[in-house]
Length: 206
Length: 378
Image (cartoon, rainbow over all chains, first blue to last red; front, top):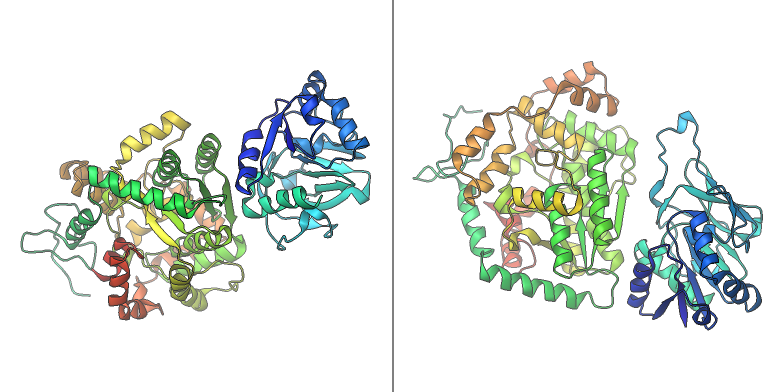
């Protein structure tokens, strides 16, 4: 069973309805006993990092997620805030994350010459694949853009975990993969057919 | 050029500022006749509802198992925003596609965002290569023709078709409406990819590498090989602009900008300033004639509206000139060039005319829209 983790941070239904088009059934749940039975996990999320962590803690989901991801090696895909939460820490609220990937989250800050670059970074942007062999990129034609909307970005201390980067005033991590832990800064569920291909790849090959 | 006595249509407000205008024995223009033919093809009332229901079920059936069942081009203006709203209301699953030619107003972007967010519709934005596109726009200024937005219009169609192919979608829903917009005379807004290429070959300095052009061959390919249909969705609805605007601002916090196509600064400059001053072309004649023919406004109201000066100031002109990277002197020189028409450049018009009968047959079979036939052959 595929479980979309519900921790009160939005965009669950849109992911579920997009999976329905593949068609793949996925449950939305905030129940640790349901999460315990998942074969694949999707950790979506829109909003504030600290609120996200607080919600996960309050719902008692962190031990359940750690058990699944770290002990059972169940594949997990973090999307947008969900990817940022995979890391160790964020400037947003200055709190600790799930710590599965050795990374930090920072806010975009641009110099005055880059003033035309707006924050948040909203829109379609390209990927530079650093690990083209990642399961996520199978059958993905080169040069297809994906849909981003974020003010914070991930910096990875673990180079091997970086699967793709994107340029927006600077290069930032747009896809991570470390073992069974996957994450995309962009929203594959809003990125037309190639976004769906990527989710399908995760569900099929991860 | 032969001088022609001033004449204005007795039914709408089209006048002899349109070079190709013809009047019948009652003093009514050919665009009114064209309107009446289109009303026959897109009837109102119960028949309209039946036609719309049939169309929607066909789109839904063909789109089964796909992420989207139709593509809708969006600009942030009234027509496309209302199309998006109504398509979603009809239960369709559109992908909104926006062609960003670098001249968007912030309001346009906000409007698009508000609608797609609230309706939960995915939005794909195609952004042009600015250096290349800017140069192409300057080519059209130097060509000294009124159709200076042809590159944008051709680019929009090209992107819509290619996205439709990528997504495996067969329907492109458009926000054109003969009832509110009328039929724009060919000489004011002629479009075709060959024309874009030939004008740029003559005046351009930056080669077109990434510009999404669309040749006549491309249109045939997408239409006959790929089976993609352009659907003038609003023609099936009792579409009235003021009501649509009120609904959009009430439901989405959508903001009105005034004139037709004023969501884009370059279009605002073109329609509100450059065309009227250089070519004596006032496109409001077309967009006011539509509602007059449809009985949405009276002819007197339209004539009063035409007396108002378009709301475009020198600042916008300076902004556009600066953004194009032209000096004021260069712009003045361009502005002073003798007026030309599209026929003075290489286009595909002759080929289109050779295909008059096959195109007419395709219109009868519902493959091309009748509006296209009216525009090119009447």
